[in-house]
Length: 296
Image (cartoon, rainbow, N blue to C red):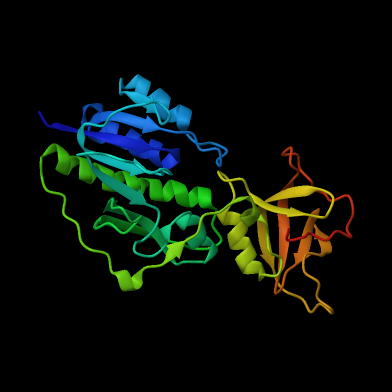
């Protein structure tokens, strides 16, 4: 007998929001099981929230490291980082970009760093080549800068939920799920980030650095810098009007404004409003004005 329930491979706030909305709007009986994993790159990965919700709704919850089989006709993956091998189950993947642009890793972070005017979510059928599958649905939101990534995650989580609810309705009614080919000539790719990629490059302009800091902030680890002695995380900045600076040397603190250092960038100035040490204690006000922040 065919299993019309859907298996979820979900992580993070986006996965939790989808699970919550599906339960509220469709019902927990539409879900066969939830497979989840922790994400060590996030300060709050919502693993426990997902598990608690599943337990409250009597939905089978399975950690990724536990052996399990998938027998449902469809499975949906959200924020998933690993290869999913299924025999007869059709896999639908939700991706943090307006495909075919930003295929690959960290698409939302990279799109915000680049100052894209809109971001969004695309649902596709999974194929052997990542993010190349046929498009089932796509939704977007406009972006006004400056904006922190946490706000955008919350906004696109609603897009995720909207798309998944529509897909679940089709599955429950045994309706075909329509999809269209991607336009290959419009494709671009997004690279994964490691610890080195969190460092601020003071040789960039202040607007770019501001977007970068906001894009890698909470729930991620936060932008890095150092003064050669201590390591810091930068969480909040404002772009200041540029001044004529002789023999411009990036990373140097020009002056202090309301106890906040104003740092020289390649073009423009950046005021650091929230700066912490590795133990999360505030590093402001600085112990000395003559500080130069390094890119690495």
